[in-house]
Image 1 (cartoon, rainbow, N blue to C red):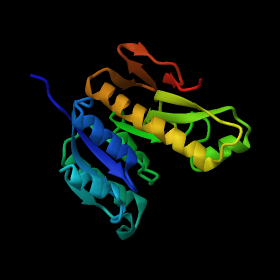
Image 2 (image 1 turned 135 degrees about the vertical axis):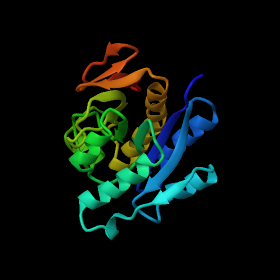
Image 3 (image 1 turned 120 degrees about the vertical axis):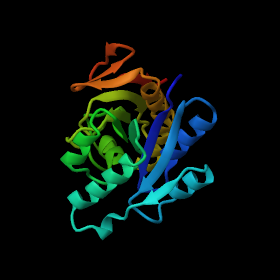
Image 4 (image 1 turned 30 degrees about the vertical axis):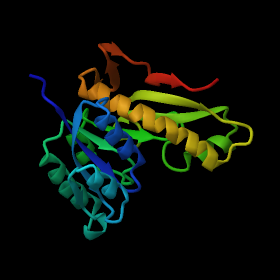
Length: 218
C-alpha cells in the first residue's frame, strides 16, 4: 500500500505557486496531499485559494510574537501537528531561524527567482538586468540554515531580452516557477528526490550544483 505524502505549504502573499501545486494535484500529476496552508499574514490571498480548494488554512501572524525564535517555534508546532513529509515554502517571506531549518532539514523546499547561487535575497530580476546578464531563471532548492543556500534540485533558465524590464522578466520567470515547483514536489513525493548531506540526489544519481536544468532558451 502506497502512503500518500503529506505536505504543508507556507505562504505570505498571493499564492500563485500554491495554485500551481493545487492544479497539479487536481490533475493527478502531483500524487500528494496538501494537508494545510499556513500564512504569517492574515490577508494573504493564497489563503482564499486554499479555501476554494477545500484545504485547511491557518494564520500565525508574526507580528504577535516578541522574537523571530518565538514565532518559528509556534510555526514549527503547528506544522508538526499535520505530520508532514514535506514542507513547501511558496512565497513565504520570512527569514527562518537555524533551529527551524534544522528541524525540517531534508524535508523542506523553497523556490527562489534566480539561478542560485547568483542573486540570493531580493530584487533578483533587476539585479540580473543591471549586471548585463544574458540569462536569468528560477531555482527550487532544499532549505538549510544558509539563506537561499541549500542544494539545488532544479533550475529553469530564462533568456533576458534586450528590452526586458524587471516586470517583464519576472512574468516569464514566474511562468517557469509554475512548471518546476510541482515537478520538484512530485519527485520528492514519489521518493525520487532527496537531500544527501549537501547534495541533491535524483533517481539515485547526484545532481550537479545547478540541479536538474530546464532550458527555455530558443
